[in-house]
Image 1 (cartoon, rainbow, N blue to C red):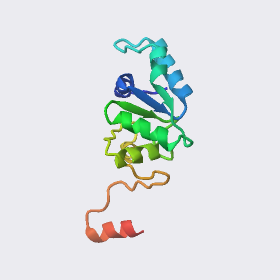
Image 2: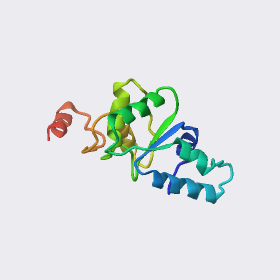
Image 3: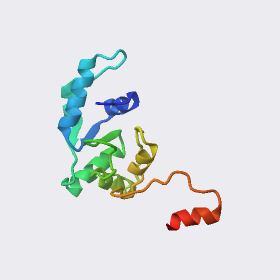
Image 4: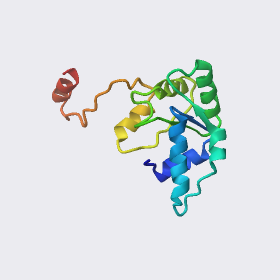
Length: 147
């Protein structure tokens, strides 16, 4: 149930919210609505429902294309069930399609900037390794990269 103010702001401005599980987004929305956080104007759940669509590993290419087409002229969001969207997640196909269609993808950072960068890169994120900073010297850097 963690959501940064920036993530909430983007979801509130989104004309379409593609979610791996729409029930999860609805539950999050309800908890924000009942929390009554000062300065946090949570739109009615009916308004959320009109913008919320399902996006799973079984989503058709036509529906994915529709999502990206809308994202080309308005703010659209992708919400995963757990964790960062697109890291071992069906959203990676949607992000790759956005890159193919020339649509800008931005991430809303969570606790790991590397995962956020990977999620918007358009690369497959089924498996990745984060090594941290590479050695400064060319020889040591090559040793690490070849290992």
